[in-house]
Length: 195
Image (cartoon, rainbow, N blue to C red; front, side, top):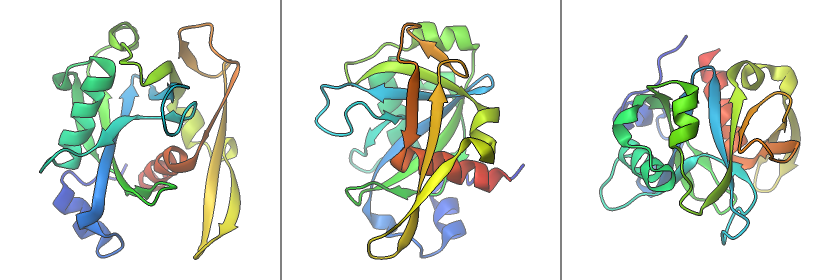
């Protein structure tokens, strides 16, 4: 397994000049819990990305690092203290549909799955907690993609998530979710790097 870049400097050195590093605007926390990756469904009341699957995260504040931003946002959105996460490293950034550069970090929740589910309390920005088996996410057969051309060719990744495959909280959630967009690209990049 490849070791993820541990600092912002490591990440920028690894990826050289591929991104406008001084323009990153936010970070997300790709949380591993036991053998799952945690996603949230954004509340239908949110002004942007309503109803979409994503990660805990948001905009940077001041001179924060991507790790600082991701952990602070996770605490604000879930109520889980920052010291409950072991940071494993950073993943290649992704541009959102609004051309914002987001840097994902990967962390591991230090306690069992049941503690994560019991601890995560919404601040109103999300409604559902979906934990997807890592085996499903790293299986290429789980994914579909579409090719698009705007300024250049790029792929949009899709991963359908069924209730029969995931751990969902609360349990009376929708039967199907679709992981797509920037969050899907982050997951794809993570497992591509780990290959």
